[in-house]
Image (cartoon, rainbow, N blue to C red):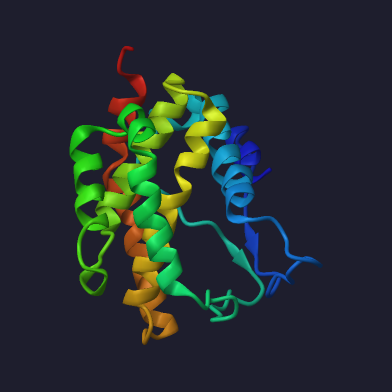
Length: 201
C-alpha cells in the first residue's frame, strides 16, 4: 500500500503504532514470511519500475506522534542453528544460486559460509549486492520466481546471524546508526541495480 501511494505521487507520512503483537499460534514460518515480504516487494519493483529506475537520492518522510522504539523482544534463542542453516542452505542451493548471483557475489558468500563461525561477518555491502542481484534476476525471470524468492531464505539467515552477533551488546542508538548506514548503502549501490535490471537477456 505504501509503495502504491508513493508510486502515484501521494504525500506520505509515518506514525509509530507501537510494538506489533505476535499473531496467535506459531505464525508463518520464515519461508512464508520471506515470500510475503520480499516476494511482494520484488513484484512492486516490477510493476512500479518507471517510478524508481530514473530517480536518485532519498527524501525524509514526515513522522507524526512519538518516534519508534527498538526492542529486543523476539531475538532468536538458537543462533547457532541459524548459522548452520545458512551454511547448509548455501551448499544445497548452489545450482540455483548459479542462475541468480554473479560469480563474484556467489564466491564471497561461499567463502564466508565455509569460514569459522566465530569470525563470521556478512558485510552490508555484500548483502545489498546480493539483494540487488536477486531483484534483477526476479525481473529477468531467470528461474521460477517463487523458487527464486525462497532461495533467499538461507542467505537471509546468514545476514540475520551476522547482525545478531555484531549487536549482542549494542545500544539502541548504535543499531539505529547501523540501520541508517545500511540504507545509505542501498542508495550507493542503486546504479548497480539499475545496470543489472536494464541489461539485455
